[in-house]
Amino acid sequence: MVSSNSLERLWAPWRRTFLSKPSGGRCFFCVAARAKGAERRYQVIFRDGPVFALLNRYPYNNGHVMVAPIRHVGQLERLTDAEWLGLLRAARRLVTQLRRRLNAQGFNVGANLGRVAGAGVPGHLHLHVVPRWKGDTNFMPILSHTKVISQSLDELYTMLASAGAR
Image (cartoon, rainbow, N blue to C red):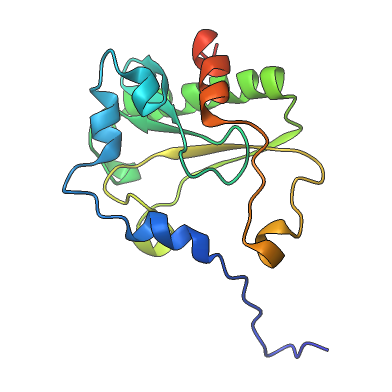
């Protein structure tokens, strides 16, 4: 029996590689945003005005996409109205496309604002769009330190970029 005063912990040590990876002083969002002609390399699926969308290389679930302003900005209150509206429109566009292409049944959409809130890249604000399905969580990450992702990033990129994620 668990005491009401105890705190259960779910460990995810495989995330440490991502969190401790040196950035080399370069923001990968900024590099990807400006990599015209190298969209596949940086997994950029579309650009739209002041924002762009790219696949998450360390996905929590199949179809995990991020949307970020092209401008390097880390705080919600520093976004321009055009950037904020662009982020929301892009998230809506992605939800529509992921529902259509992957038959997603639900979504987690949100941002981690600041390192203490879980932001892996606190200097460049971004939204996460994570498709969900009934029963998509299981024992694999807990017992075997393995997250099952049912589709390669390359296949997902081709699927979403070919349609412009429209």
